[in-house]
Image 1 (cartoon, rainbow, N blue to C red):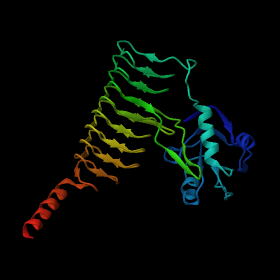
Image 2 (cartoon, rainbow, N blue to C red):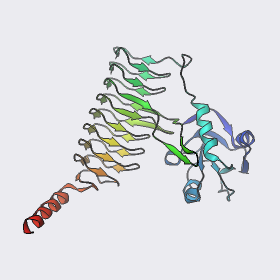
Image 3 (cartoon, rainbow, N blue to C red):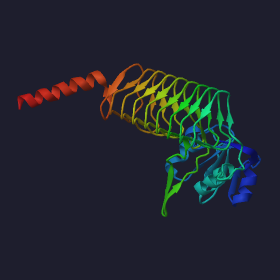
Image 4 (cartoon, rainbow, N blue to C red):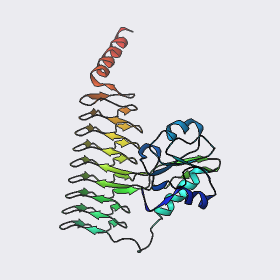
Length: 303
């Protein structure tokens, strides 16, 4: 997410009492978690296991819990609770809007918004869309033209993202949004989580059946079909023209190539090559999975 007003590393160090290592004049233009970080961003790390990946990332400024040699071109802010600082910054940029002080929604020509639907602050909806009864479009979410959001669907809910601590699970404030491209169809009671720090995207022409869950920061391609009760965890990429049949489940951080077919009730826990059909849990190429099932049945016949 981009900051409304860029700041410097030295300014944040003074604000939070952090030790500054490196160039205090380094400008911070955005906040991001490690999966989507880019130059100009601030991110955080609070476990030695992730130091190397974070320090080698594109982040310009890194909140870290222990002093560490500062890589060239970066700035480190050492603070005993980097997550708390980072989460507080996100809250400051995206406070909960429970009044009428936010930006009014913008709705395009020919768009119908049914009674009971809620449009949050800063929502932008294109032309000839249909927003069903009791649908919720969260703050800052956007959509193109001819989009259908069926009744009871929630677009832009908080990500299911928590930080474990000695006091329990602390909610990680979601600073991203959701964008639905042209001609997207969302069936009844779908849930599309906003990105933690980037934008969750549903590509042009994609069609989602009832009760489909899309996790934070996912990038769903163009003309993808998902049948009822599909669940896609956070940070996944689904290639164009892919098909996910009913009750398929995709684990976090997985990428599916173009024209991938995931058959019903399959469980995917790794990246998959496109242009193939996959079945089972754990998933394997469908032809092999069916051959294995035949062999298992033959074993039973011999017993």
